[in-house]
Length: 318
Image 1 (tube, rainbow, N blue to C red):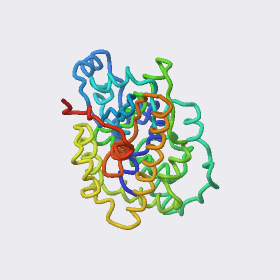
Image 2 (spheres, one colour):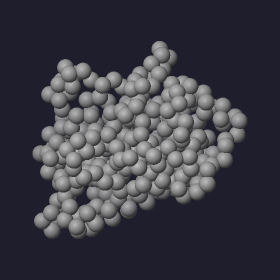
Image 3 (cartoon, helix red, strand yellow):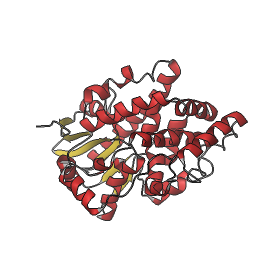
């Protein structure tokens, strides 16, 4: 288990975002995201700037937009900057890994067993006790009760970023989805919840649980998420592209195989979806996790090899 896996956890974080403000607020609990008052929101809007990774892609006289998201964030990051705002206006639909506001997203995440297989075995007592301690520490109450133990632990990894001021409540996907739904504009998902969960958890539930708990019990691991978040906010392609060299998370054959399954194999599915939409005449804003957009196998490179011309619109764009 590595921190990048929880950073890509769009589906489960989408479920959490609308209800995170009701989590425990005892002094020992992590800080909870609070909805901004009118003055704070006005300040965020006045100071809005572009963050994240944003390209316009073009081919055969038609265009669309590719936005690399972060599934956790800080309050001001939830307000789109000028370039993203323009893309939001011009796109004819929003395409996400998973639409967080779709009814089937919520029901699928709460399903007792995944559609692709039987329910996982109960964890050994020692692992179950470690998980209980982390659930209590996160002050989530009964919020995660409908998830399997491994998914609870992976979700706790993302929630642990709250201690550094990074919260799923401020992730990009809920903000984007809400804007399109309120305007009654199309929103669609590239993946199903089951596809994403299977990619993130893999075939060994207990191993995923064990690795996630190891990371939750290691405070030093949060440094990777902090660096990833700040690089994302700055649109720092060099740092994000070099992620495999500094994350200390791809050192073993097992870790590299996980990264291939969770990131690279899904990139192929995402690129094919974009090409189908383009061939059908659509001009979407495609918003997926930022790690899908960097490196030789990232979506921009894949689209370029397919004959698309890409123009950088993110931070520092002319």
